[in-house]
Each structure stands twice: as C-alpha cells, then as structure tokens.
Image (tube, rainbow, N blue to C red; front, side):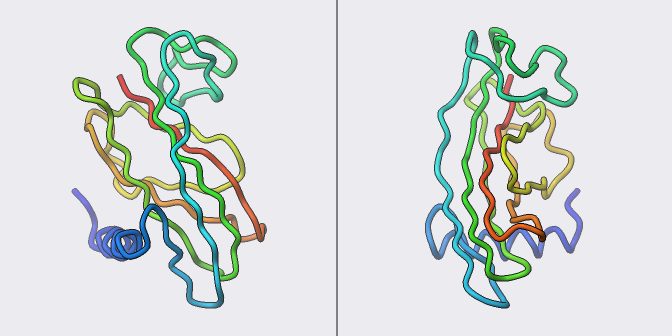
Amino acid sequence: MIKHRHLIAVVGCATAVAAAGTGAAVAADGPTSIKVSAAPTLGAGQKAPFDAPGVRSIRRGKPIPAGYRLIGQQVEIARGARSAGAALTFRCPRGTTLRTFGIVGNAGFSAVNRDYAGHRQTTIVSFAPPTLAQATGTVYAVCR
C-alpha cells in the first residue's frame, strides 16, 4: 500500500513529467536540466552491466540467462536546485514481472513503492546526488 507522502511525491513528479514530456525538473532553488532517454533493452546472452540484488543469475559481466530482460532508462541531470528529480515509469513486457532494479552510473534512483516485485509496472524517482552538480546514470528494471 502506498503511503500518503509517497503518493504526493508521485503525483507531483508525474504532473511535472506530463507537462514536459519524458522527464522534468522539480526545481525550487534554480534551474535544473534533466534529460531522460530510453537505454537499449538487454536480453538473453548479452552481458549484464551490474549485479542484480536478489537475482543470483544476473551478475556483472556474465551473460543474461534466457527469460530475463533488462529494460533501461538513462538520466542526465545538471543540478541547479537542491532538490530536483524525474519520475520514471517502468513496465515489463507482457508475460513478465519486475524482480529488482540495477543501476549503472552516478545518478540516484529510488523506488516510490517498495512492493514492486511481482508486479508488471512501477515508478522510480531519479535525482542528482547532493554533492554533484552533474550526474548521469542508467536504471534497469529486471523483468522475468
């Protein structure tokens, strides 16, 4: 069940994304630039770019086993505000569900709803780490 403060965060981010396309800044202290783009989907036989927490068969540098797909979105953030981010929606292909997420790069990501495993779709919030003015990262949904 989603908590009230998480619901407010999701609605705010979703409104910003709807207003600006694929990604939008939620800036309060200055201009922030956020660019969201699709990363290539990785499938069976391709090398995994990370160790997937909770999924022992997905390991960095090892081939992705049959039945798994890694759906990715890349985020580039030039932070001007202390608090800015983008809401990213992940949806697994038909017949598969979310298992976990993996991150490559230095952008921050957080799952709004921590009970996503076994579901087909969820929302992730991306943000720049507070010590970096610029951050780039890719978050992958592990689907099976």
